[in-house]
Amino acid sequence: MKKILLVPIFLLLTGCEITVLNPNSETGNDQAFLIVFSFALMMVVMTVVVLLFVRFVWKYRETDENRGAIPAEVKGNKKLEITWTVLPVLLIVVLAVPAVAITYEQSPDKTAATQEEATHVDVTAQQFAWTFTYENGKETINKLVIPEGETIVFHLRSKDVIHSFWIPELAGKTDVLPNKELIYEIKGAEIGTYAGKCAEFCGTQHANMRFTTNVVSEESYNQWLKK
Image (cartoon, rainbow, N blue to C red; front, top):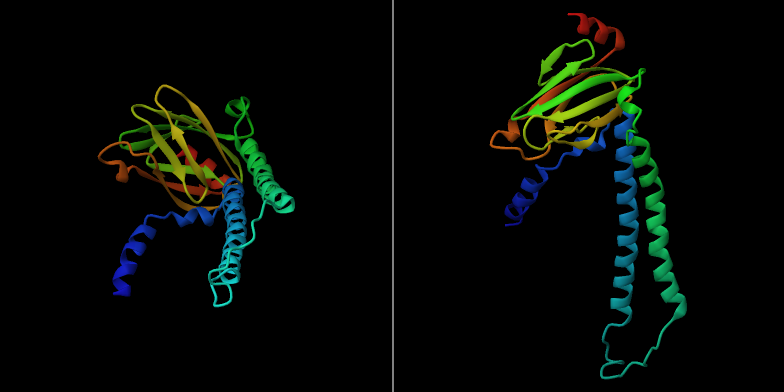
């Protein structure tokens, strides 16, 4: 019976994308840090709450000595009230500082679209494929090739509906909108092959809207562009 009850749990877990916790880029490392850091704070809070809950349940349980007794009226405790007001604020500040800093640092500014030292790739999403156009005009479909260690600037557009560009092992997802260009950066990608996908339901073949990302050395990338 217990094994049967575990089945739905495992089915739910199959939908989890745990590769985001195994980042292979500077951008992904920063985003994974926020996930782990916020989870650690949450566990600290939950541990304290559970311990206090267990302590109070045990301490104020009904016994033969206190059965029928009426507890003394408590009007308030300023120290406790200040403590449980200040602590949540401090936790929010502790979480907000790195979250705001990393989010601001990873949000492309107006100069990102034209920075010369970066590698630029035009990304066009359409039901149900990805088209990648490189700086020399070369195009690939459902296959992205980028150089390692560089800043990659993606110019994201959609030909039809809203899509979402996502390479879990390199960076978080970002929307791709029709009739509007969005800029997204991935920095310091490591050599390897990574799966990419559309993370926004976009139609009947949404599950098949995938692409392969090959991160290669700069020399290999330049040679590939010339082919």
